[in-house]
Length: 117
Image 1 (tube, rainbow, N blue to C red):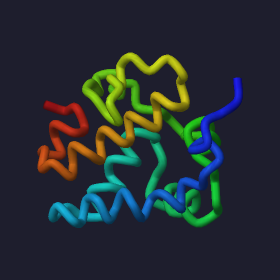
Image 2: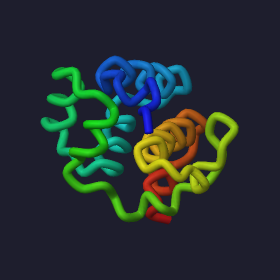
Image 3: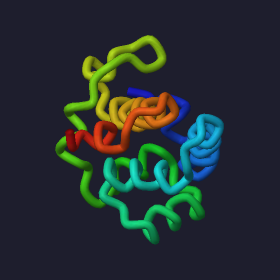
Image 4: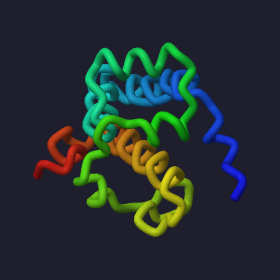
């Protein structure tokens, strides 16, 4: 199966858009980073390296240190599609991240975004 166009996009080229979306709603880059670290298992240095080195989305998720097992609790609609119904694994991971950033921008508490409460 041919990959989606986003798979080849560098994570670092999209990351500033995640931050900008959060900051427009009064949230912080630190919160965006916390979400990404929670989802992927990256530490801050690893995350910064991936942002800087041009790693594409497919590799970013394929080589994530430890995808959070609680990510399966992420439910809802993103881009008109229920994330829990996306069958293609890489696209589902990308949409999980999109959903978490949306929740942040909508003012949801970090405890709930990170599925702790």
